[in-house]
Image 1 (tube, rainbow, N blue to C red):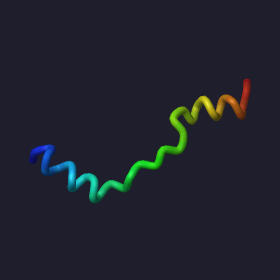
Image 2 (cartoon, one colour; image 1 turned 45 degrees about the vertical axis):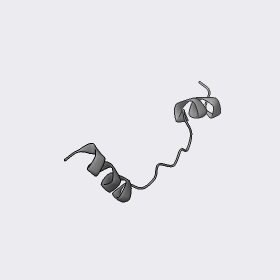
Image 3 (cartoon, helix red, strand yellow; image 1 turned 180 degrees about the horizontal axis):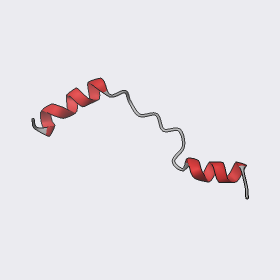
Image 4 (tube, rainbow, N blue to C red; image 1 turned 90 degrees about the horizontal axis):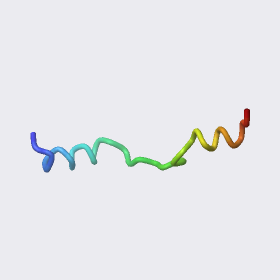
Length: 34
């Protein structure tokens, strides 16, 4: 199957990505310093 046909199917079945934080580790390190 080609990507041209596969992408619309994937977009239909995969929920849209929610960007929570680009670097969760950096935020964790900022709130929990060692």
